[in-house]
Image (tube, rainbow, N blue to C red; front, side, top):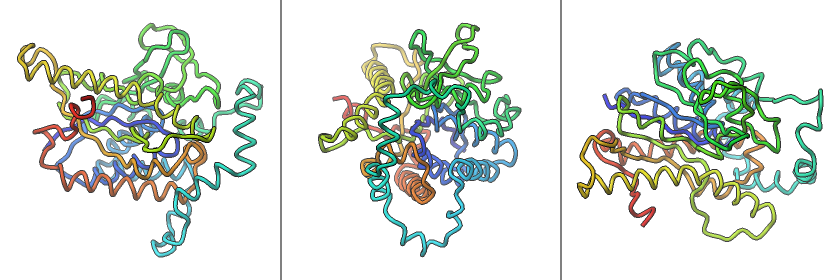
Length: 343
């Protein structure tokens, strides 16, 4: 049995890709999840996995993830046979169709002009009804994988990590609070014990890796990456520019932590610091940058059942490919070349 930690990125409805990755990993009886660090959609996936795991083991976790994403998009068409799904438009076509539709463009424009506070008593967070249904007795339990939820404190801009009993509906909503769409979520800050306003955790940790550096946790960290690290073409349209700005912003904290890991690995290899003085983290990553390059912010914000079904399938394929090539490496060696990444 090999134990690993999971680091789950946020990315709105694109978190369905992570659903597929987790669904495939849970089929492996010899892989055990020891801890999960999640941000935004990653926090929802992590909470669903842990709660389901404590209810019914691996199958319970898979069933709870299915329930979560059915709630997110009312995925009635997931029951369609594969031959019918094959006739559905490609996710890239759906994404572009939404992005350039008059209704979406009007909504995007209004979103840049109006504050979410302008709605007054009409305001509601659509995720709250879903998150409220989580079994927090299991989400916060000492048993099962440790769960860490990342959010950004508005006042000082620092990262806050919620764990144990501090994980509530509000802390998960805080982790997924895009400030142009949702009002800041007020919840007790685990760092200070005072009630603070929070925005999306992606600004400071997408996901936060440092909670997984605890000596009692395994050395292997598997990152499920949603936001593409690279794009070959330079964005020229206003929507493309804004989308890439958001991707770079939401990847910056992850890249900083990966660079720090690479630095520590180098010091350990050179003998500059004694072995055991700092944790020698082994980094792995599952991603599908080609698919994510074809999508846009439109399908992050609007949960289209057909796209979510394709994202789940893509996540399962990506996880299957990773396991086919690197299952034997888990617990033994790192599979991400951090030296090349930052060379």
